[in-house]
Image 1 (cartoon, rainbow, N blue to C red):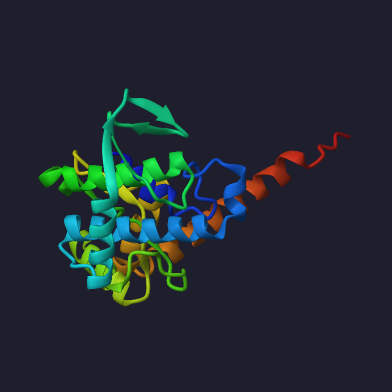
Image 2 (cartoon, one colour):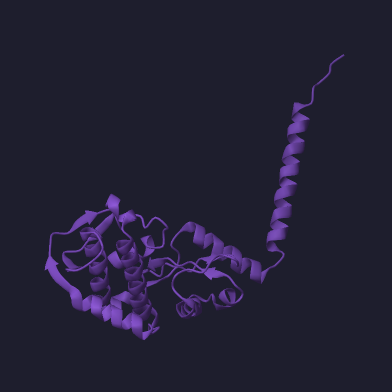
Length: 224
């Protein structure tokens, strides 16, 4: 889904693929609007998928955004790695480059047009260790997502749930193998605190045996 890809790429520091125009980096108004639009899109997604009600200023700004768009139909195409649907949306007045404006507005309209299908999207169940900076979703949505994912205990203990979204029509839970491994390790560590210490000890013993075997093989053989 376009809005899922837009929000996930919006998490990257370089906003990969959301903008292409070389002058964008120097356009403060465009950069400010991009961050604001991502915030509004994120708040709308949280509301529709988790039932968390955005603050009134965010609701008012989202209504204004939707009221300002005009719709048009175009042939489906790929741009900057995104699959653009046939139904497009765009605001006439925007500080964003035209293609970026179309991408963000189309993502918002698609999100609100999905109905119950939006529930097929959820936050990744991966975890980042305590001390990791919090993501952009906000404390309320973090808490709600953690409850759904069975991660509330970890989040209360200072862990951070992965901020990426997962399209999960078949109950997929993770955005990557790395997140799957991290969640497994965290849960295993809680259930069996000695598990990883024992695993590390076993690994070190295996390495010592291998090193010893290499030394024995390399020892010279003397024949009288």
